[in-house]
Length: 317
Image (cartoon, rainbow, N blue to C red; front, top):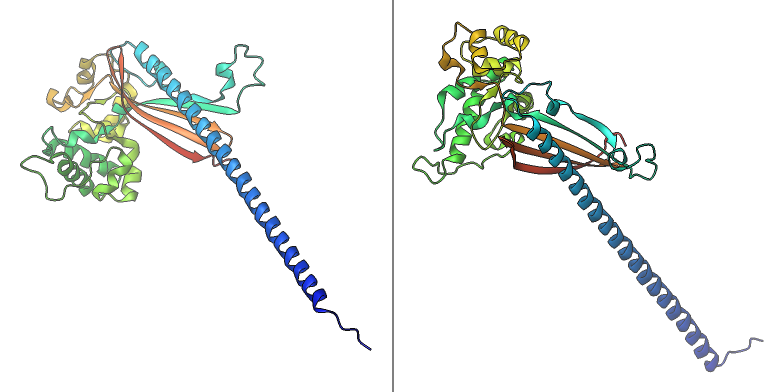
């Protein structure tokens, strides 16, 4: 014979189940809140660490730029060559080797690696030469860029495309302003804004630069392709002989090397440089921060004309 449970017993059982369920919900809620708080704290620590590393990296690379500026400042000759002190790159070295007072004891140094290089910006064709101060295209400079494109197997209309784009961007506010002018590129890789094909830009980039003022080409540091482009009437063979005849220590030395050319053909070349590109690279674990700067040397004064930072991951990590 079955024994019937009283209603009081049923209520007691239901209340116990509800209490247990409530306790489980509270435990789950507390655990969720605890996990959230721990995650937020961890995230804050990560953000603070990343910001500290970024600030330290920026200061280190700024110091490297100051060091490069000092090297350029101390180079007081009237001509610049590829075997000058500034042209020697700094191979990747552990940062503690620069900072430690005792070079034999670097075990406590940070696991950071610094490298860098200074290159002559006037060893390349300056695209700013394509237009004058009012934004008008300079035909002789367009012809020089066409010769460079031809030697690099790039479509000749690339020169006209770049010149027209820069002219349109620089002529804003003048009577010759375009209806919808393009953005003014600040770097060579931004020439795609003007419609330059990426494949053509990849070939052209090692031979051109985009500065904020007109410059000559330093024949002591330029490649034969650039020399042949900026000197009318010169072919690649003649340019190669000029490369082999370097250094040119005085401007007349260039004319002596090319006696059959008029002096007017040499107006776009020189033997010294005022603009340089300084690159610093700092590697921390798998993180890499690069600083790319364009500096101008005027006598013993160095001006930083542009600076940019590029952050990435080390491909070898």
